[in-house]
Length: 299
Image 1 (cartoon, one colour):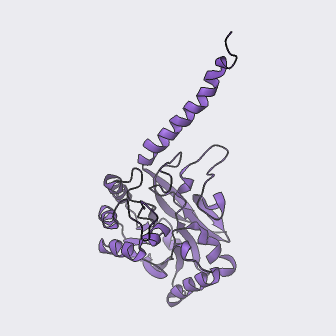
Image 2 (image 1 turned 90 degrees about the horizontal axis):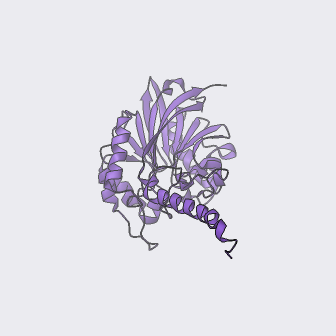
Image 3 (image 1 turned 120 degrees about the vertical axis):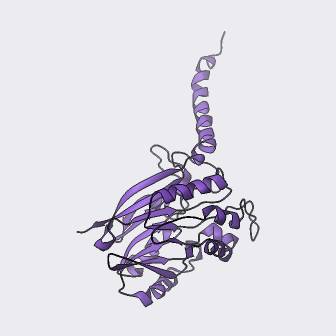
């Protein structure tokens, strides 16, 4: 007599097969994809002079992580240059570690990452900030290499551009892992902006979206703050039906996982980045270059 379980063996085998197919896809296929995520971003009360301005966001390269070799980084550069951007912003985490030593060994030397990233072109140049993995390695080393290939790295520093006769200020902030207390972090940002007070709207460049509550609301760094551009989350590296992005490196869960967020009257856009960290998988969250065209939204 046949065991009654045998006739259900295919029923049990099917979920396991689906799981392993998805696992293989998330390791061998999706991390190798590179998409352009083009977004019209409505920014509340943005100066109309900057309506239509195109920003390219590149982040979380994690050189040497799964699929991120020299060729992939050069593809990032080529795709970014095809967008004819007004400005390109680099939002941190250029390196990837092989161990947890201090400082850690890298899967790809930062000099090599910088060489591969060289050649980015935009009307107003390239601005960058430092991420948490960069800081664990050597943030000054990362800054030095990016500066060597012609990019400006900001840490509590302001860069200004002028368009249609108006100024727009870009404030680069330190990585969120450097926050010791919220008030001090906010005050440092205010001090960085102070010499340029009243000289146009402010866009913040910051690796992690978790700074939004730190620099808005009661700790608002400037009444001119209109937009935060952030990364770090990788979009959770995976999206699942019903569950969404269940694993996000943020103190706020899925709230700041990816895309457009508006909170405390300030807009924020979070890119899902290029590489992987901790786990070498991506599922329904492919590597991206975010191309954000600013649009003005009035009440």
